Image (cartoon, rainbow, N blue to C red; front, top):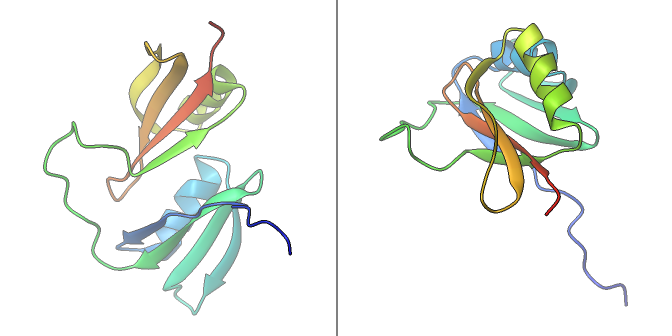
Length: 125
């Protein structure tokens, strides 16, 4: 019997306009649209480097404060280059890259529906 192994996790964001959200993740964050359902789309998938997220038409959740946890946490390599790429494409970066006490360098991006995605890279130590 094969031992179980998690191969990936795809968060699902409820969004007002699936087409707009898919375009944002493609054009601003460099993801590839790998699937969408119906026209106009009511569901879609975006991926980058084999990891991604699902988006579904619905009412986005309401944030109680800016201090709430991220909606998705993405570990990457080449964080500074990725940050530069996102800034050049017009991403709404709400926290510039900073090294945290737990040896991860992170920055945050907010998408058109208010979801906060943190990108992080392990740093030496």
